[in-house]
Length: 421
Image (cartoon, rainbow, N blue to C red; front, side):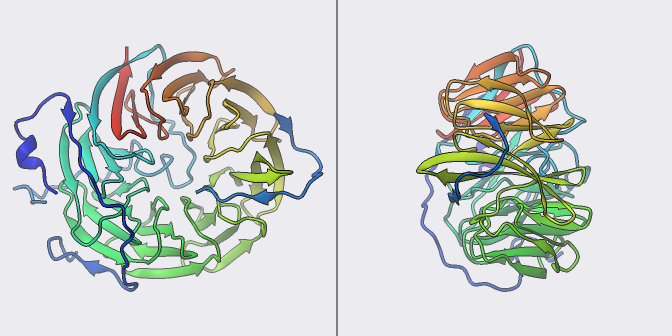
């Protein structure tokens, strides 16, 4: 639904609330369809003592059609980049305390962090809308509510070359104009589509819960290839060195989908991988003797063989961030952990006082991460020392840090933008 006319006279803090129907709508599968309104164009790893069982985790056009810059900067996709590293060497963030610069109440749960490109935030929400916000003041630049679905948008959009790519629970991948939200094409994959898209070299890669991994042409949505995983894929795929990594479960050629390696037969859902320097890092949750435990794994990017693992006594619900020879994870034992990429040994731990259901963002020597009590923390990468904390009052999505600002969504449906105090 277009709010441009309404918002033209609105400045400063904006508040809106809209409700979406959360039903699952059936979609046909097949080729991409150009839009009529768009264009045609704790303990270290050791010997296993118990066999674990893994747990499933589950508009109107403006007068000018000038596109946003195609420069891939900021956080253009989930975890910043196609490798899902959770870090950016070009960004900086607040270190000495924050204050709220703006907030916007959508009123529907925000499941994953936004993409942030060229001064605009792009969010998918539970009210079946895609929103584009001004990063500086929170003004809504546009919102998009397609008429053929009314479903959750759980995945983080990818924004590349002036196009927003986003999937829905109806199983449809959409390509929207980044400056106006106009539909360019859509592709019906079928099944829930909660995998944040990864866009590399003119191709859009994603998975679905109908056991498939898809590669589509970014310009028109034409199907390039599919790969049958045999497992539900909720996670983001990593694309590095012409290879697509499906968690630690399999690796396939980015060009044609042919299998490079497969393994880890105990996996029931491929987790989101971070691929750095020839190693794939993933987290997994298991039940051991009736208790939840979490593990961080490092496997070879070449053949999938395990290099090390590190176990905690509670589950690790989100993916890792990897920066400067360190793996950062949040755990439901209330801690944020820093592990050595070399062998998984613990470097430091920080107790947040509540479950950490958030993927860290690591920027300029600081780890930004939230907990289930709605507190956002900034921790030193050196030793985990707290630099500051900020209370939002609601459980947090994973934060994104771009141009000195921290952006985070909450379970109560509010977008917060925090700047240096």
